[in-house]
Image 1 (cartoon, one colour):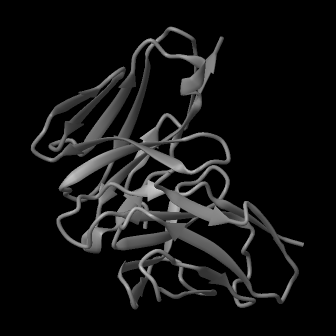
Image 2 (spheres, rainbow over the protein chains, first blue to last red; image 1 turned 90 degrees about the vertical axis):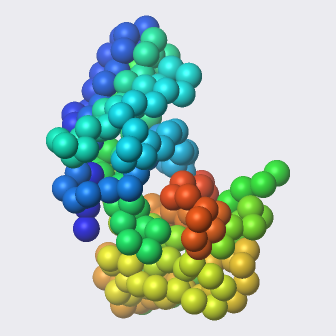
Length: 110
Length: 115
């Protein structure tokens, strides 16, 4: 079953601009993760935020979590062409499984 | 290099054939997972294994089978009972069955096409 829903489904911005993607989920979580997938490749883990955290940074990435709204956002600052990829959120489930959203496809225009 | 390898990268299957997708990891991870990804969609869990000689069905296990005889290996067989097997298959691993955190590490994927 799919829990996470990313918004928007697709996003196209100019290089150098900031990109914001959102993820909503339905049930309570222990943590939420963001992954990146380049076209036709495997997924790469970006960042994990725990339910007792509100904001986390990693380089040009900023993730926020609002458990009262059951939502998270991923901000990529000063975007680069290499950031072109699909971005997925995943929430934890029982037995160490993850539930995945359908992803946001990000295109950075040069 | 530590990581997860999947082979082959591309696989073509005729109707009625069984095919096996390979997944090997040298990360010494306990848990391994198989996902299916269809165009424009997220990942759906086929099977997972938290320890050698044990595995559980995921959300879409029908038409698939797995084995976990070695810690490093988790092959997936797509049987002829799987009616729509054309998809991108991803293998992942996670460090520990417990206490290892939830981060999963992915292989490069196998694209399966039914002819």
